[in-house]
Image 1 (cartoon, one colour):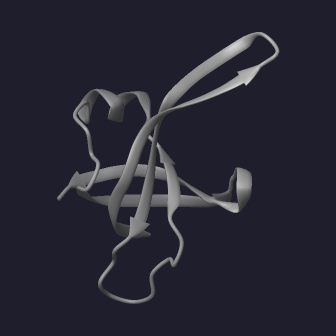
Image 2 (image 1 turned 120 degrees about the vertical axis):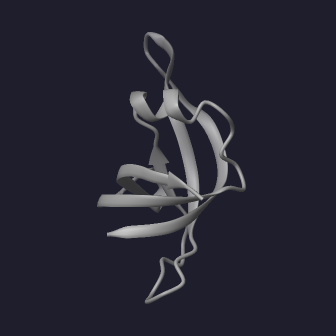
Image 3 (image 1 turned 180 degrees about the horizontal axis):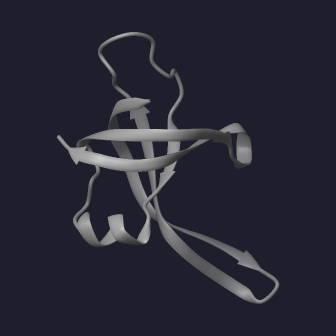
Length: 90
């Protein structure tokens, strides 16, 4: 399914394990702004893939994107995490 979403925040996802701090990929917090049909009420997380990090090196905060979602899974703290690909920056 495709979402028209607005990027609310963008940060590096990092956490600390027993070997120290681990920094992984860019994490986007998005809000569904689809105009037709129902939309998600709560914001959801989306990790940029390595290829997408190269294509979208500038900040995406406050921009609209067309997101092709293949899966929505529960994440830490009751949030939703989307998997898929950014089709277009609107």
